[in-house]
Image (tube, rainbow, N blue to C red; front, side):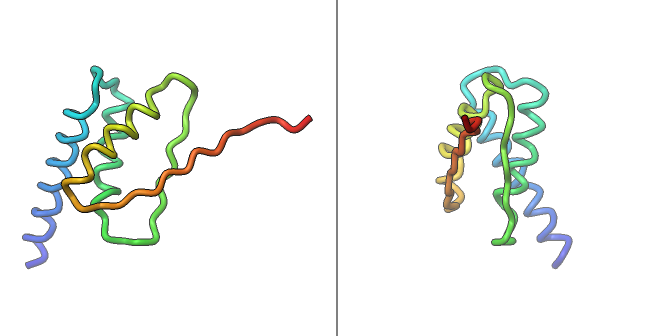
Amino acid sequence: MYIFEVLTSAIKIQELRGDLLRNFPHQATSDQIEFITEIASFLLDKDPHQLFILKGYAGTGKTTLIQSIIRSIVKYNRKSVLLAPTVERQK
């Protein structure tokens, strides 16, 4: 039974990865593809105590990747909470 669950999980991760790439409106860079692979596994993990932090420089595609995630996870009955803190230097 365990092998079946692992295979089913792996298939779902690959399916979500494909959905994320299809919903990404640009040609993904190698770093973005790496992120999509990692986030697909994270999103389908059943551990409710996990946290995924996405950070990066301006213009690296973070917002576009998040849009792809939101469009894709509806199919998997997953909920999301988005936080967008900004770092400002105190004067």
